[in-house]
Length: 300
Image (cartoon, rainbow, N blue to C red; front, top):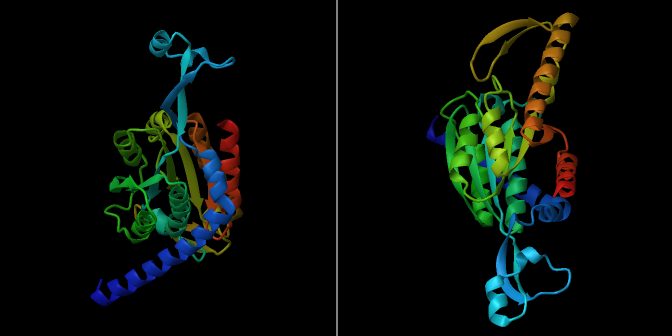
């Protein structure tokens, strides 16, 4: 790529980041900020002070050392920890570059990640980033601040992956290793993975953290068009095959296998206790996010 082409690409990326920033700022403020705040109020409590025991207090909070010194029962008073760490694990494999709509799945992933990142900023939370293909592509430690959220959005759009393959396991393992305190881990991927070998790592991660799976799809992937013989290419392996899309049986088999694959992924997520948020390029994803926040508030 020439220097001029690099400059043009950077200009396009910066323009996209700016558009995403403006869009998500409004969404966070008007639509989702309060729901994020309500759901993710912090994952623990910290000691604040002592006070005299009152009828109805939980006896487990009585501090017997202070009680012995004061000759009256005293309880430990706690306040809720407000700070939460949000880790965004974003798929940048070859299939993420596909898009039959205005935006590719990678661009939609960046927009969705920005929604969570700017929501975290508004909530005074830290946010970090994991980029993955079939290997760890990049790890950005969690920090606070608007500029950090912008950096994360830019990294998702600008990163050139070393591999085009896809495997969720490396991202899950690095999250297990690097995140010491309970966090919200948002996995943004199309989940077009060759197998379910990632399930064990996801289950382990979900036992330690609150995990959500944002499943990004493109409408053109869901059904074959009636367009005669087409040469289809796997964006990750490069393998090609010729398909007669005019044959109803071919389209039926494609739809059936896609449905079976989708169900296998959904069952794996349910077995791991992970919330699934389906989104598609060219569609409004706000209802799906609202449904997620609403459901999680009921669980909390």
